[in-house]
Length: 174
Image 1 (cartoon, rainbow, N blue to C red):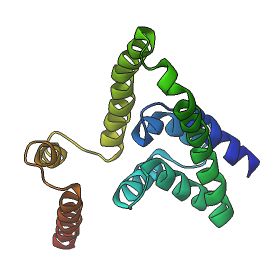
Image 2: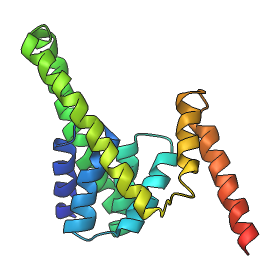
Image 3: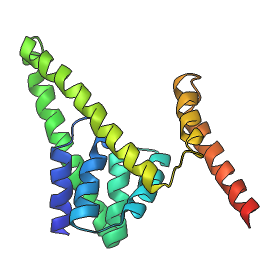
Image 4: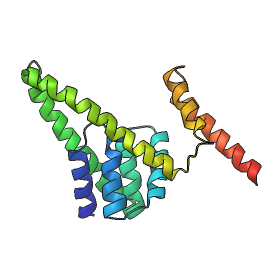
């Protein structure tokens, strides 16, 4: 339990950019190093965490902790994930007003932004491979993303449509 908590505290401490930026760190620690879950399980847990209300990183940590140690594991992972962010945000809130006018602080934030995009993009490609997305099925995530981005379709409708489509497709294969 302590190892679980400490692992998620480390992940929480070194993640800039939110829950999706945590995916590479979670994957490295939970799948590659600790081998607590497989890549396929992580992909499934990510899908479930995305479809649940709430903070993605917390949802994902709850599911991983629950898989390993049930309720106690879920609590340990949740606290480990949320505690560093809470402390960091509290410190930033206390001191940011004093430093935000400095050019170097603005430059640092401009430099961090592209790195955050890369942290989010890298697991997308790994998840696509783990979800067995091929050239013939690549249109599905592309249409979903474009629907959200260009047409303003709510992600809720995309998730519902995908669930209904997946169920229907599964029934047709029986």
